[in-house]
Image 1 (cartoon, helix red, strand yellow):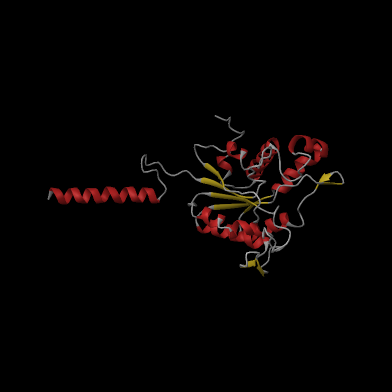
Image 2 (image 1 turned 60 degrees about the vertical axis):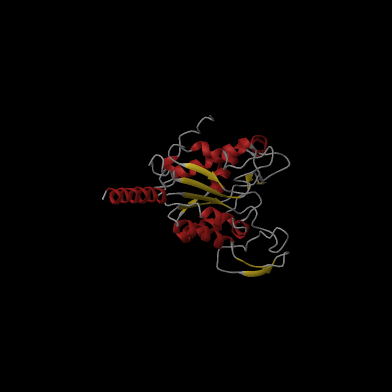
Length: 270
């Protein structure tokens, strides 16, 4: 009888611990798992080049780390297409839990040839068009539109119970008639359409940053946020500026669940 009761107790303890672990709790403390903000994108989000930085690095300081974790899974040189083909997205989806967030920003590497050595260009637009290409490795690949890839990321994130937010790409330091160039007729437009099609939030980062750049002027923006040799990637001060713009956009959204984790100012480095 005593052995039977002991066995039943052990089974109950193992079942309870397993259930807590499956629900994302910390088995050593029984505390619920904190949500995670996952970032995906290219080098404008995560840059490992000396002297340059993407906004995904400093943005972590803008969130209450006692309530939410931030993981930057962006990778330089990737496009909406190559991030999927290389398995980077599938690996990240495996980490997703209900209550997590996915902030995505692609577009800078989505142009160019479909079948060159990098093979990262997506089809222009947001429709269902496809084109089969042969890569230089000899492998065949069906290429989709930029909008299709964004919708794929959104759909997969939603299926895991996460909240996806689509961003338009940050503006390059290219000026036309006294104003920084915008992507309102291409990737910014297609990103907005993808978000609308999936019924998720759209953060028009391109517009927000450009609207802040314009009154500063080309000379000041160059001096403060870029280098003379690069009109796409920001310096650390530029990354910090863009991170602040991301938070500004999140807080301006109506009923954005991610905004409640954002701080009023970035936390001091410990």
